[in-house]
Amino acid sequence: MAPSSPARPDPVAPRPTPGLYGPEPVAAPSPLEERALQAVRAELAHRGMKLAPSAALVLAGRELARRAADGEERPLARVHLRGALARALAFDPAPTAHLVVARPEQAVALLASRLSGEERFTHAGVGAEVRGERAYLVLLLVRRKATLRPFPREVGVGTSATLEGELHGLLHPSVHLTLPSGRSRAISLAQGAAGRFSVPIAFEVKGRWLVEVVGEGQGGPEVAALVTVSCGGAGLEEASSDREDAEPADVPGTEARVVGAINATRRSFGLEPLELRPEIAAVARRHSQAMAESHVLAHVLPGSGSVADRLRVARIPYAIVRENVALGASALEAHRAAEESPAHRQNILSQDVTEIGCGVARGTLPSGEPAVYLTEIFLAPTEDGAADRMTPEGRVREVLWHERARSGAPDLISDPALDELAREAALDMVRSDIPARGEEGFTERALGLHRKLAAVDLFVAARPIEAARSTNLPDPRFRRAGVGVAIGDSARYGAGRLFIAVVYTD
Image (cartoon, rainbow, N blue to C red; front, side, top):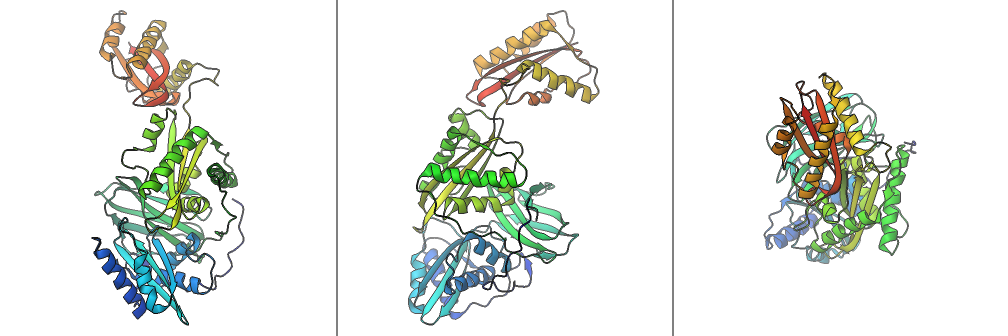
């Protein structure tokens, strides 16, 4: 990645609050902040929400309110919000932020009027800045889905720290990093009690690190915690700016702009650009529209299923699929939020995908503010052998023979009679769309070829390399094999699948 120039000091940003992520820092609210928070808590209590105060959100809100008072054009922009959260020791990934500017006696009531009953929150903080007769109030609301044990925000080069905590309402935690180079990766995490995580992290190089915890919920994977770590005295705020040209008025133009940003990021890391496919974009656009209509940011919405389900309904075959969903004031800002998330960034920089569909939908937040919902679908197509000199059966046979040699078992002998039987089994699978159908019958027919031992593996795959999962392949008792492959659509597994049959005998 090309080196970037150092970020200029931000005159608005205060010195970071000393302490550790996890415990709430010390922050005594001002009388105006206290009145505003009490009004918000009372308003949401009428709607069945019990809010806990968060000192970290108070500190972050104050910094953002000061930006507004100083005339910052976009004081709640993502880059400013992330920096304020890090300096305040807040680990919440995406707070809902509201700004009001009014006379102090009017500001509290105006802030409470911005609230919506559709979103559910657990913690809140209000930061205030008063300049003359004008009060600037910033309310930050979160639904906190993780607790963290104390974790450092500043570390030395070559040191390690253990990230520990627990998810709330989510399961199967995973931890992801974005390194100062911009590369992202997942960290291997030992499976313990449901929802708990503990993993040591080594900070090998100087720079800004991002550490993220993701959990699985009813709506699919969800970011539960995101912290910025300064290694070796690096800054907490990213060097890039959120300034951007006006967004295209048409949806296809907006989507193309996001794809351009994705490919620009990939090229900066030496990766091939992704090919835009309109049919994938249509699937992404429908999901973004569904999110906008329901005011829910999630991979899985009621009645829609996962991205794999949506692609199957659209009859789009794939070997690998990954999905990012994001929300922002513009499509590009939503994409930048996805790029900042280490787990989402891994999808953007994946070397396994070659195609993309991007879909946007302009809508409103529950509070009535405009917003853009974004869906990015990354895909590797199935391999049907159309562009391959070898037939699908030849490619599957190559995979099987290679894996057999790697296992140390005796070499297999290709048997034309078994090939014919396997092809018949593969075609039968396509007709029935049931992978395991007829396994016993084909085994008996193989034994009828004057063999003492026989077995049949039937399965559906997206790529020939998946043939390596054939369960009987390592068995040294089998010395002969036949391979059959049929290409067809499956209501269960998707379009353009490889129906593979392997018949083994002694």
